[in-house]
Image 1: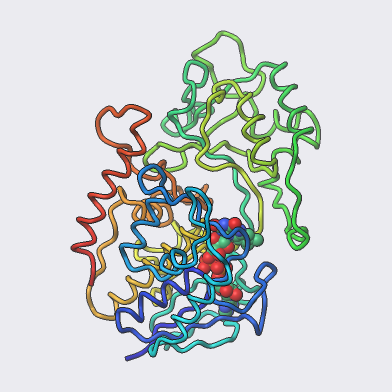
Image 2 (image 1 turned 90 degrees about the horizontal axis):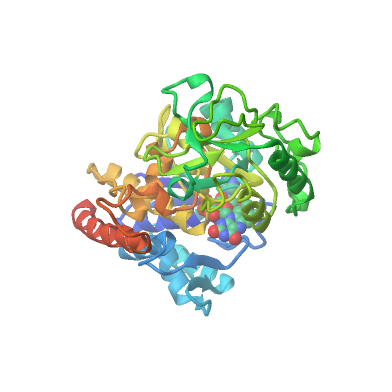
Length: 441
Ligand code: FAD
């Protein structure tokens, strides 16, 4: 049997490899470390955690990432097995001893008779005689391969850093102040949510942006170029007090139905997912600290009580525009023998990256067996994060995302706010077990 080539022995690549060999499929795993390093990895271990040692909340009843943990355990995830074995005390979070964690994954993979581990950088797109490939080279994909992926996917389909604007839950926006309208009523006329500011509010806001605490670039991030189209909002504010009012906050083409006063500036939010539960703040990519974002952005009229599905940020991250270039089986549309997995697909975080590795491994194993691996329903954590990259998100504003309840369809019927999370997780538990019983090859 021909092997599957998995490129990248990080979290996603290790998990994909495990799923494949467990299904009896041989794997050649290509990992470039230690022959070539990255700016963040420190060891040559497989599945090295480059920063925090936390897999975040382990609460499967009230938290979307905790729910994802449970689903991955149910699917025989090697990464979750290692995390559980190497767990260290961290309250409700799942944190691990990073060395023990990586060593366990490496031992299991190296000891498996169907794995060949090749320590070399892959510098080109996989040749056609590598019949099945999974690229899981992560946010720090080496330059040579990134260039080739860039060429294969198109100029706009590969990003080298995140410029993330905050994303807000629609149901936390105050519509006594905010209103739906597109500028000049373009599109269907109501594609945006608008938050109006008076002149005094705008001046205070610009001052807060200028004075707000920012996160510093790490040394190796300093060479990351800004694209003029996605300057951080505080950099635009620094360029002059009116820059934002003539940029993303221009008050033109809009009529406020909630007040007779003409807005001096307007913050716009654009729908971020097909379900319409999440809205991103247009032009608000930022390097303000998380605390400062919450403080400053809650001074925007209509967003006083905004809850954020993710806060803004700017850091180096190689990722493809998955909604545009991948099919729903995670295959590159124009090179279908190549699948992508992990953070490079536009998910964010250790757990989410691993989850996509797990699914990619199962999909490739099913292809080889000539069977079909049914995709998890979007009401489950697995299905929700998968749908973010293969269809749920808008390709034009696609940005990496952690798993969160905004990616799930809202629960049916009226559910009290404090019971909502459990409504999501209870439905997910039922749908997941129904699916798992049928999906496995
Ligand atoms: P990785 O785990 O990075 O694995 C990719 C592997 O591919 C690496 O081993 C790399 O050496 C290898 N590789 C790259 N190019 C090639 C090539 N051409 N040929 C062969 N091998 C190659 N997430 C969190 O949840 N919490 C955090 O605290 C956190 N902190 C982060 C800090 C930094 C600086 C960065 C960059 C990311 C951070 N992330 C964090 C995101 C985190 O990296 C990812 O979530 C996770 O590691 C991604 O898993 P992955 O398998 O996709 O990539």
